[in-house]
Image 1 (spheres, rainbow, N blue to C red):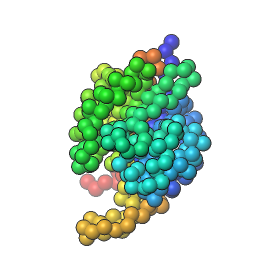
Image 2 (cartoon, helix red, strand yellow):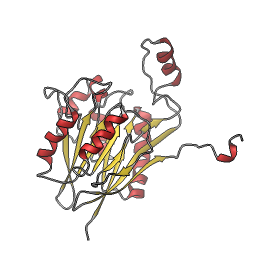
Image 3 (cartoon, helix red, strand yellow):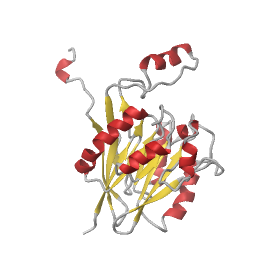
Image 4 (tube, rainbow, N blue to C red):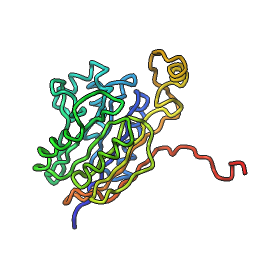
Length: 274
């Protein structure tokens, strides 16, 4: 009987407050989902922008197998030696190749078959970099001779671009998981050819905030239209992500389940006015 591979993908970790909560809850999450592989987006850990080897080693020590990043990784120079290292940390493949780092890595599995983690970045309302769709084709031509188990972190601003990437890769990868916008979306599904898809995995960090930023600072940025120093908030910290089960033989996804821990407070219907 084919083995089901359990993959835990943790959405954008914001600040050391988000990192601490993830490290605290990860053992229970791994047990809850019986996770074989843990992937974490860590581009926002150091003061909200960037990642250094110190935090990466803490994640690896806690059982994380691969770390993805995104556009903010370049805003902290401490990230560059980490990207250039042999650690399983990836940055969006479609940046100019002269930048340090790699766009995909392989996670070895107990049966000897690797899982590939590929990262791409969208272009709409973001940097004018190479085409992520063509970059995906280029990468898969090199990855698929080695494995049909592929998880894609698509770091993009616009939902339409993310959905388009899902359709572009349907049947060619195990999962396409969106990151960057920090708001977990309600569209998790299995695409017709066997790819698990979610537009955004959500944020791991403080929710008493504006996308992890202190509310008063975010309001000043919007209302005054001038720069104000980013400061990570501290309260209502949650871990968000998605659990994917993949058929290890075919590489096709069997299920996809977003989660938030703890669950956000929701208004009960009885509390609404008539």
